[in-house]
Image (cartoon, rainbow, N blue to C red):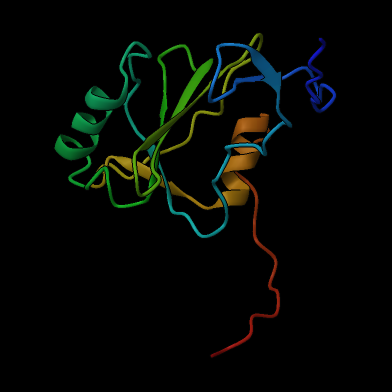
Length: 149
């Protein structure tokens, strides 16, 4: 006697465990976890940061040096001394997300900071340009129509 089991064909060769067995079957790819956008406020920390720091020690920097709450929903950006590594720390509502970028060549732009606040405030397009290596010092925003409420 033969028993036939019908299975879906593999999709993208991504595996997940089935509930009743230890065998793996494929699952479709999920969307990207990069959840940052124009509705966030970005703070670039003014001091070089040790990239060995992780969630707890970066939260300590935010609390003590920037005098802000790490769980405020704002995004905090840290760059190392040689300016080739960057970390972004963001509270997503249920936990922290830590983004990390390392440049293989070149450095991130060195911006001037507001000494009183200890950080440089960026908007989303400036963050994207900073991450992509585009100089944002001499950029001026053109006047555009904004709908008044």
